[in-house]
Image (cartoon, rainbow, N blue to C red; front, side):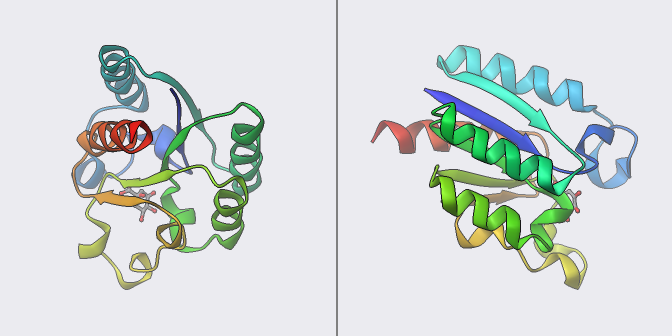
Length: 145
Ligand code: DQA
């Protein structure tokens, strides 16, 4: 089972950006946590992060050719703006779990719209890095059914 963990803009700045919201751990800490968990679960996991919308679209299309089974996706700010990213996930038709580190539902009005949630099989928010772990477990179970 191949799962892609996709992260959008500023996620590479974890540990630096607004630590009172996103915590003090870094993007590399996040990768390490997911890698260890994926290894224990026997899941083949790959990672991609970009600050550019089109790069994320390209990577979603690449997931189709790479025969990726599921995507764990934190589109970050593009969650609230990007029809292109929603359309890309619709196009490849790969089961996708939406993850947000912070509790977006309790934040500013402009964060209350999520385009990706129109296609996501599940949305997890406000659980910090553990949200990615929950997403992996959920996706694995979903794909095994
Ligand atoms: C985020 C929430 C978004 O609103 C924000 O733009 C991000 C990160 C999160 O993980 O909590 O960059 O997706």
